[in-house]
Image 1: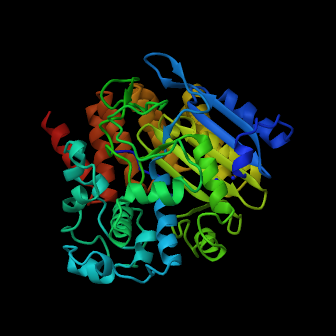
Image 2: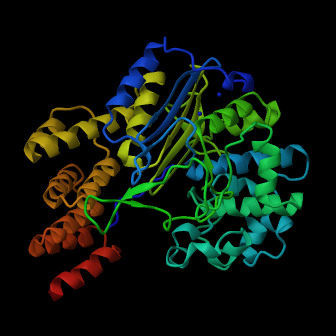
Image 3: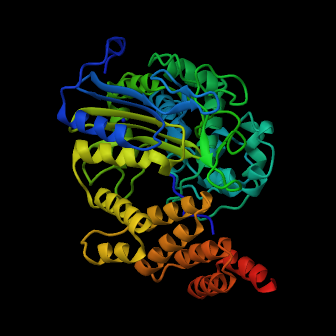
Amino acid sequence: MKKITYLLVLVITFSCIKKKTTPIKDQKITKIANYLDSLDGFSGTVLIAKNDSILLKKAYGYAHLGHKVKNNTKTKFSYASIGKSFTAVAIFQLIQKGKLSLQDNIGKHLPNYANKVVRDSVTIELLLKHRSGLPNYFHSEKFLNTSKEQFRTLESLKNLYENEPLEFKPNEQFAYRNTNYIILGRIIEAVTKMPYEKYIEEHIFSIANMKNTGNYDIDLTIENAAENYTLSDIFPNQLQKTIFMGAVKGGPAGGGYSNVDGLYQFSTAFKNNELLNVKYTDMMKKESEGNWYGYGMQFAGAKGSGIYGHSGGHYGTGAEWRIFEKQNYTVILLTNKDLDQGFFDARFFIEKTISGATPKLDNYFFTKEVTKTCLDNGLEQAKNAIKNSNFKLSEINLNAKGYEMIKRGFYKKAIDLFTLEVFSFPKSYDAYDSLGEAYMKDGQTKKAIENYQKSLDLNPKNTNAVEKLKVLKSV
């Protein structure tokens, strides 16, 4: 079965941007810099500022592996879902001007929207908060199995979701869906009578002086842009470019490009109420009760931590801007490899160093430690480490590491990691499904069948196990 997906899922005056980076005098920054230097294979750029002074701005790894072109601090990276930040700000700008309301239905601005239920019951607020129930076109077969070249405009995406049924009733639950922000982009176009791209350039990028940020066509030349690299599913232990794996052009849901200075300038402009007035800036950065996602804003740390911003992740992309309001730090992180190839390590270490430990962070680094023990010293030592610790394993991260081993062609290491997952999460159908896949890859058919069957027993709706068992039993 595919590994558990996550997406997933951060400031200074403009004049200071032009100044040289302040020499590091902050112990936290020194600690972070040393950690980033130690990360094997880390590729990207990092900017950290405190009290309107940039304390760290550094590039790591390669923008182009084939030509051995190194990343630099001006390199542009795909920022994935960070684009939702810009769309949310644009919506609140129009609300501030009295042209929109959070309670407006989609139909008020898109009267020809095909699905009447959606047209009449889904509001702008529900779109912003990912509570609409709309289907996720981005993971639909119609999108994944079609050339992305035909989807360069918002209108060209309509047929992928407008006539599809809702996943759940509006406001019934939270589900992160790119579809929500594509529709918000269409509403922006309908209200302003401007293309989404032009509105964002004039009312956000221009105001924040973001000269190196844009929703580019990624199959055209982008000056000083990093290529994105993901571990191949086909060629063991090989990195492949991701140009065919996502949208061909940036838009309201994300996919544009920027460098660390551009996102820092956006963070600063947002924090200083230069994009919205105080009322609406505060609305955006207010934590949503019982949810990590608000009005186009993500919240990290313990409740009331004051950490807000937005991240983005896709194949070969990890990006984030974060403001640590209580500690007066701003962090911009851009990478051009998979999330689990350094982005998560950097992100969580920075958060822990700046704002302190939380159970989530402790569990992440404990899982990383146990995983390393399993790979270096064997399964039994890893089990002992779990038995003797008060920390909890993160199943999602353990599972992801197992699939990394599969992609690298290290099937027996994957078997050990998934066996550890089964040991730690014996009621997880996904753990058994993953272990079945590792055994299948390693040619151990009998054990693959046993684990797929166990997964199916735990979850009779696991269609992946049903399909794999048919194939394995026919051999």
